[in-house]
Image (cartoon, rainbow, N blue to C red; front, side, top):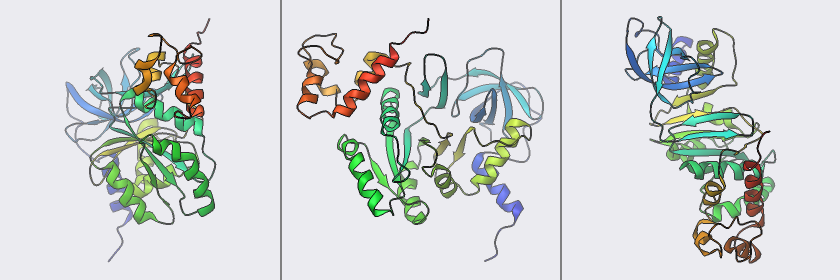
Length: 325
């Protein structure tokens, strides 16, 4: 069997990222499309009619868009347009602190949280990611990479056991040493779903994307050029169409996950182990921090709720109450 040439590989990469080579430049009027990449105020929009994605900019001070947003836009030239409207979102995943917010993605079915047995993953970031998913109505899935390291795997399993006990799926893979198994396990989970891939740097996200999306490296370079007029960057969020159906949104690695935008009521319901006990607190407006007769605190004392999970809740409540003066 002959190997495909550069032109064929590039065409396949364009298809996986939604980038074509012709069509659509002569259209006028309002069109609809999906934001498939973003960097700053630069957005790449794939028209729903299948024509070539074009670079778009928001009109005036219009709200920030997220990858996965369905929008209407108006062409200004063959390769540029203006976003007119963001259509109604099913959900929006983002992080925030007192000063700013950072959008991850919109209109999601699930969040894939990429961890590894090595280097040591942050349990704080894992917990915050799960809270964000629960608060947004997005199904979380934990992927544990580098499962071929037996000593490190045993330690990682022990750390993840409390999350598995809460019902969160944990998929163990080794993307580099057992790629076929990884494709089978993760590919089935992603099939026909809109997913976002989150994780710290060094967990193997890029390797996984290249495994799941043929030609992803070439597609990334082409998206980068389309977003930045030739200036290469990989620090942007982008959407890939998966070969077996569904889409995967890859976001740059992050080291912090603020949830300042979540109210106390939203936070208490984002912990699945809290929800069955919320009606049992003595006071209807219980904060679950130090109140007498608190069902959550009683469950912590009995070991039915992990003390580390309650500590995360308390920290998030504290952060959400901070006001910039």
